Structure formats: C-alpha cells, structure tokens
Length: 367
Image (cartoon, rainbow, N blue to C red; front, side):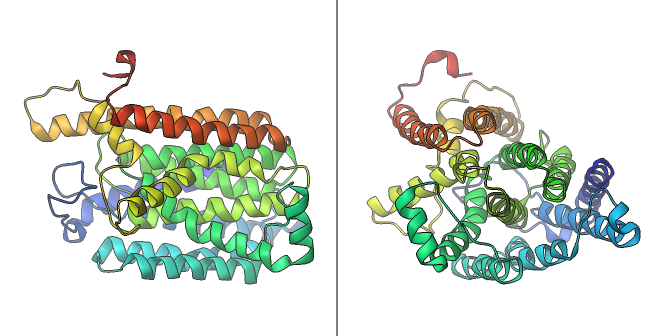
C-alpha cells in the first residue's frame, strides 16, 4: 500500500513537471474578464492529466502485483479495480477535453459524468442501500432502483461540486486529500485494504500535483482534476457504505458537506436571481473570502499581490473543511450525531456567508 502511494506521488510529480515544461501550446488563454479568474498569466490547466497518468500506472501496477502473487499479494487488487478504472474514464476524459478546448458545454460534461455513474452502477453494482432512516430504508428495500438513482445523482454531481470549489491554489486539492485520508482511515478500520489503497494512492497523486500548484500556481487541476477527485471519492464512498454495515451513510455525507452544500446553495442563489445554475459568477464562498477577508496583502507587482492573496485564501477553507472531517472520523458509525453535524454545518455556512456579504466579519479573521 505504501509503495503504491509512493509510486503515484512521484509519477504525478514528474508528469506535472513535464506538463509545465512542454505544454506552452496547451495553455489556453482565459479572458481577463472571466469571473472565476484570480491569477495573472497563462497557466496550464491539465494537472488532471498528471494525476490520471499516476493513478492508471499505480493501480495497474497493483493489479499486476495481485495477478503475479495471487493471494500472497497484500493489496489484492482484483478485477473489479479494472472496472473501477473503466467507469471513471468518461467523466475524466470529458473534463480534460474541456481543459484543452474550452468548448465542451456544462450539459455535455454533465452527460459524461452521468455516463460514468451508469457505468459504475452497471460494472460495480453501485447503489445506496440505506440512509439509516427507517421510512427511507423501507422504500429502498421495496424499490432498489431508488438506491441506484441516489448513487447516480451522487456520482454525476460530486465532480461538479469539486469543480466549483476549485478556485484557488491548493483549495480543492487539499480538500480532496483530507477526504481521501479520512475515507481510507475508516476503510482500514473495517478491513477494506483494497479500497484504502485506491484512496491513499489518489491522495498521493494529488499531493504530487500540489507540489506544482501550491503555493506557486504553476499548474492547475482543471476540470479533469476536479472530476478525478469527484468520481473516485463518490465511487469509494458508495462502495464503503455498501460493503460495510458498520459505516453510517452519513459519514461520507458529512465529509463532503462543504462541496455538496456549496453546490446546492449556489444553485439556489442563482435561481433566486433568475440566472442559469450553469452560469459562472464570483459569489461562491471561497471567492467572498478572497475579496472581503484576505485583503491585507501588499506588493509592488500586481500579479505577485494576486498570487499572495490567492494562496492565503485556501487555508481558511481547509480549516472550514476540518470542522466537518474531524467529527465525521470520530463518529463514523453514529448516524444521529453525523446528521446533527451536517445540519450544523449548513446553518453555519449560511450565517458565515451572510456575515461576509454584510461586512460583519470579526477583525481577527482578516489578514
């Protein structure tokens, strides 16, 4: 498991360096007036390619090791891991296509993440078997197709949720690492070493990418990177709950409540203004933190000042994520407690959002 993670880390690190060195022609220029642009210059947005190469090679090596050593292999990465790889490819390839061309609309990317969900259900038999709520669990037992529908919604939606929070150097990448490590911890608690290995190698590949992304901002994950995080974490969360009755289905929900609630709230906010949910804007929570909390940065060079503010934004959101990850890891079997923390986060998020909008942020938070 350790060698698999080390392999993924170094392949992502080397691949990222090669992309930076050789991708000048692939640095698609974003218009300066794009609302989600918070950097100067043209930076390659195909960090997802480095992570994809790292994961394919690392997981492939794990499967070869299992095939060669058989039951003597510690990883035991059996044939289902191959189907796991096949299922995630449509979403990831669609994200990379958008990164390279900027011509793949949200509708088509949503269709591709939906296709990944369909493949996951078909090839891996993914479904949400329970929510630990008696009346809903009765419905799931009576109509199993509802569980497949919930799984499809989660798989199709989570990549876009990660894409939404992927706004500043290191933000989404560190959130992905934290979530993967938390999931891997519980996998090891219930003895699921193969799933833990997939998650740890994903965290390691992300760490290799982050060497180039934070704090220097030399390489961005792009849609491809966000979709890798989303589909791998969605697949792993469903498999973990599906295989192990001890794990509450609200454990992954609390782990992921930040990107999920950010997406839900953004859709509500845009619909309330009469805008399309797919329209980009600069009113996400992390963007407000950048504009109204991280303001005390001064430098003669404007691009350097923007980079410094960019880098100082992410730690606020890392801490925000840890507020949910810590109780999730502590109470991964206790559904009522996990549900209470989910509700508490949603209330806290809305209160914090309104406080920032109304310029009522405590002075000690501003820097």
